[in-house]
Structures are given as C-alpha cells and as structure tokens.
Image (cartoon, rainbow, N blue to C red; front, side):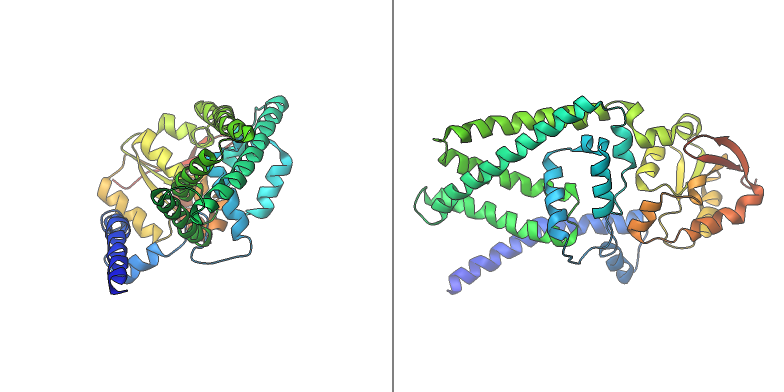
Length: 353
C-alpha cells in the first residue's frame, strides 16, 4: 500500500511540475512584465477574475449544454449557422454575452443553397459521430472489463478516459463554451474512438463512419469557416478599423474601447500605441496622460467606441461604460472630428507640445 501511495504522489508532483508550474510561470511573467503587477493580492485577483466568456469558477444548470456546444464547436467551425436567423436568436437567448457580429458579418453573403448543403453535411457528421461513439464505447468497455484487448491497451484507454473526465469536468466548470479549451481533450477523444472503432471494425457501418466523419469535417470546416476567413472583406474587425489601419501611423496614439480583438488589429496593422478604455485597471485619464508624456505621440486619435463601446463586451465582463464616457467628456472640447463612417467616428486630439 505504501509503495502504491509513493507512486501516486510521485506522479502527482510530476504532473504539477510539468503542467501547472509552466502555466503559472507564464502568468507570472505576463503579470509582472506586461501588466506591471507587484502585489500578490493583485496577481491572484487577476488570474481568478473574469474570463473571455464572463465569470469563472462557478457552476450553472446550463453549463453541460454550453460544454457540448463548446466541444462540438472545437471540431466543427459552424460559422455558416449564423446565416440562419433561428440560430442567431438561439445563441442570443442561450449565450446572451456572446458577440455574434464577427460571425454574422463573415457569412452575410452565403447563399441559402450553400447553407443548406453545409447543414446537411454537418448533421450527417454528427449522426455518424454519435454512432461511432456508441460502438466504440461498447468496445472500450470490453477492454476495461478485461474481456478484450491487452493490458497495455487497457492502460491506454484508462489514461485517455481519465484525462477526458478530469479535463472535461474542469472546463465545464471553468469556461464551458470556450472552444480553445476543448482542443486538448478532443485529441484523447479521437484516440478512444480510434481504439474502439478498430476493435469494432468488423461492422460496415463503422467503416463508413470512419470515412464520413473526416470527409464531412473537411467540407464543413473548409467551405463553412476556413475559406471565408481568408478574404479580408469578410473580416469584421478589419472592416471596422479600415480607416485607422490605412491612416494611423506608428507614432500615433489610438484611444479606443472596442475590445481586445480590435486592439490587436490596430497594434499589428498600424504599429501605433493603443490605449484601451475597456481594460479598466487604474485611472484611465492618468494612464492617457502618462502615455502621452512618455511616448510623445504625433497625434492622439479618439475612437467613438470610447463612449459607445460594443454592448456585449461590457456585459460579458461586467464593465462600467461610464468610465469611457467620462474620459471622452473630459477631452471633448479639444477634440476635432476628422473621420466618420458606418462603423465609428474618429476624433483628433492635439497632444501638448
């Protein structure tokens, strides 16, 4: 018994050192070098605060359904579904803080025939996947009960199922609809399905499913998600920030409240400094004054998203939009409107000499 306990504890510490340790180290580097955090309480509040989809560390009745959506979305793009009004209404009801504008813009030109064919292909993939899960589950149960397979195969199935159970439970509790979190367990799901389907390979239906699933996923993901995203004209944030991307310079400072994705576009395409008002840590006015004093920008460009940010973003993170509104009002008398389009307004603020 002591030997088994020793092996268990050794495995636990190896897991901590090889997985939890590097993750915490990355967070520590980001906290100290990027966000300039020096207080332990501030660091702990940051890593346990809001996530990309809202609150974390909590459980709701809808969490399992959100987990299913996140897991399925992890293997199947599903962007084409936003061309259907009924699906948009469902997402709005089920995930009220989900920002749909990018997906809706991406598929705005999809024809009804294209959407219908992608829906039919997706349904076929899901039916085949459900059948393969059932057949593979039966085969793997025989392995676990020692009615089939070898000890090594049994160990492989146990490791995969343990990982899926532990990681899946944690993700369902932490951030269930985050597709990025489901990428890791999908690998182990595929391994279990491969083992189970190999043992049940005598059935012609299993062979058909093994061909249909990857073929269908290729079609759905390629034509429903990947190819549309290769066209800049279908990129919402590229279109939203088109004037800034074409006119902002590296020595400019852009003040915006459109969110972290929009911020990343501006930093990458313009190389300008970006001051975001949605990241509400500290005094925003002081941050602006400090950044102007430090970098001495040629121009300071205020975006209308400072006082009129995306409502979903602020709802998701529980942010106070009045902070950005107050900042804009403070500088309003010195601002000059230099551009206006269907997406946003851009104001020029002449920084002090």
